[in-house]
Image (cartoon, rainbow, N blue to C red; front, side, top):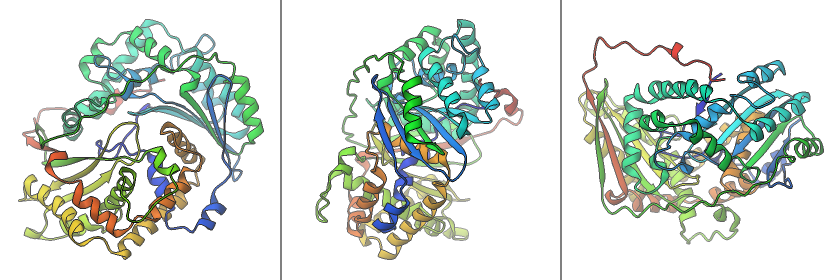
Length: 487
């Protein structure tokens, strides 16, 4: 079993998995949406904890997720990585459950489990036989309320976290470049720090740093339990009140705003690392979708707003790189000889998140090409959209691709739970999917053309370039055996 640091598209984008899930039904008629959407209920326990339930009786299984609205963005300088370190330590016991016993008990129930840490949230999830839900809620509520461990457990586990950083970041030239680029892109936003933490902060981290973070943020009013699958809402409510409702209420700490200042000039980073290929990534600061944008029912076609722009930018990313044979692939990677500009090229947009969002363009130069040529070609494809717009056929194709993806995705109860939890983290309503689909359906070619013309100037861009250095032929690759079970 492995802990995960929540991955985001091309590391720059903080687009939550739910965002594309919402979008993917955009070509379905409202009647079809209403027919496909199972009932979802949300209620709040007396101590402030949120509970969300979505029954799905197609198979005798259930997904149980505990979401805590705290991630790396809630850390302070000098303690980067503490949210992720705490996620590891949550498997190290309570007065009732010894270190490592949590995972063994979940396995004995016939379930599987894991956890993740992201910039915006931390999540713990299990998939179990539906008749074992009470056992699972007893275990998870105990861990949430009574996590404790001796200092020696932390001293051992922080070395695992450091090794995870070495394997996933320091052994990857692109990951190291993106880490440096994140610190360059953002000045004030806590998104500038890596989720796994800087190695110097991990070296200096103490057991009490982790305990203090746990006591501060793991409070009922800052958490949500999401249950999907072969369950009954009344049953889940009864169990939630029994196991989670007994946890004492405590106030959620006040979060001070850490707003990113307006960028007023091009930022560049040349990053040298042993690598076989050069690489270029361009991040553009763009607006994000707020909960209020979904609650506002008025969508005049001629009106522009940050929320509408965020939706149009998401459509633009899909037009450029949302399906096999999309614009970037056709223009940059399918040629031969001098006409082939890149070995790969991509685009992504951060639609949702607690912090500021980015639109990302990236590419790997083909043989004989430079990163400057790739960067120019990527921006040229955006300029073509700004000049000529997008055809209705392209817009419809994007929607069809999204719909096909969603049809299969929502077959899994875990994916349903992840979507609902992501909604909650971002303060979205239960019917956020339908609301977002309605908004996306109204995005026009003119709006896509408009955002392509307005958001891709130098003043809001950070360009990071990986400059390959010779690879030491005597260097031995790190063996996967070092990444042992965290539990």
